Image (tube, rainbow, N blue to C red; front, side, top):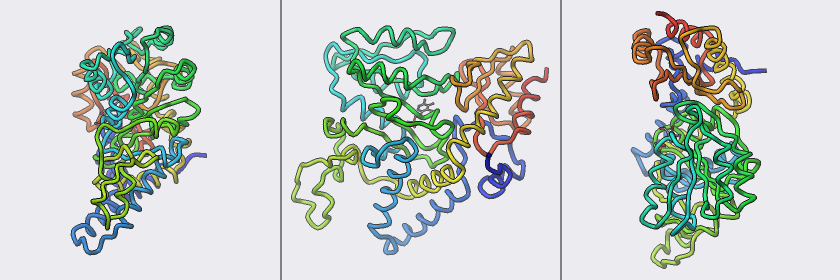
Length: 383
Ligand SMILES: Cc1ncc(COP(=O)(O)O)c(C=O)c1O
C-alpha cells in the first residue's frame, strides 16, 4: 500500500496541489514541506526573542537530528555528526583518514565535483586521486573492483547515485570488496538518500556524507556525515570545534581547556550550527518517516519507470540512465535529438527539470503524480 499522494500535496505542498508548477527537479533542490517551513519559522520567532530560547531547545533539536538521520541509514546517533552540506562531510573523510605519501584514492570519472576537489586537494600530501574511466558514459564498477588489489589503493570514494546519469552504484558489492582488503569506503549519498533507502552496515560504508537540500526535502545549511563507530575514535578532526571537546559541555567551566574529544561523532562537528534549519530538517525527516521511506522509494521508482518505458517506445531519444531498476534511483536522464531545445520547451510549459551533460534530467519525488510525469514526457516528445 502506498500513501495518499493527493493528501500529501494538499497538506505539505499546496503549490503542487494548486498546479502552480510541475516540479521534477528534486535532484537540484527539494521543496520544503509546509511543516518544515513552520518548524523553521517558529524556531526563528523564538530566536528573535532569545530570552524565549533554552539550551535544551537548541541542543535537543540537533540531538533529534542526529537520531532521525541515524534511523534513516541504520546507524547509531553516536555515528552522526551534523554538517552544513555534503562537501564538509567529504572533507572530514579526506582530512581525517590516515592518507599520505604514495597513497591512491579511487573514484569514478564524471563524479559531481563535491566528491572530487576535496581529494584533489590532498596532492601536496602525496595522495593521488585516480578516476576510473566510465564505460558507455556510466560508472565502471568492474574496472574499479579490479583496481582494488593494488597496494597503493587506500580509499574508494563514490557517489551512490550519479548526479548526471542517475546510475546507482552497488554499494554493498564495492563496500564488501573494500572491507575485505582494508580499504576505506566513502560514499556521497546526496543523490540517493530520500529517494532510496540504505543500511550503512549492510553496505560496509566507513564514511558517508549527505546534504539535506535535495531528496531529504530539507533547508539549505543542513547535512551530516556518518562515521562508522570503530573509526570514530581512531580519527581526529582537522577542523576543531569547541563543542567537539568533552569539557565544553559544562558551560560554567569553558576555560579549563580540557583537550579531550568526544568519543562519538560529535568530535567532527564545528558548532555553532543553524539550529532553525535543523529544526526544519527534523520536520522533513519526520514526514519521510511517516510516509515510510520504503514506500517513498517504491513510489519514486514507479514514476521513474514511466519515463524509462516511454523511451523504449520512441525513436530519437536515448535513455542515459540504465534500464536495470537496481541501477536507478530518482533521476532519469534522457537525451533527445536537441537537448537545449527540448529544455526550452519544457521550461515554456512550466516543467522544472535540469539540463545536465547533454541530457534532460527529470527527478520526481514522493509528492509528484503520474499525470505530471505523463505531461512532462508529452512535452519532451513534442517536435
Ligand atoms: C552527488 C552530489 N554531491 C554533492 C552535491 C552538493 O554538495 P553540497 O551539499 O556540498 O552543496 C550535489 C549537488 O549539488 C551532488 O549531486
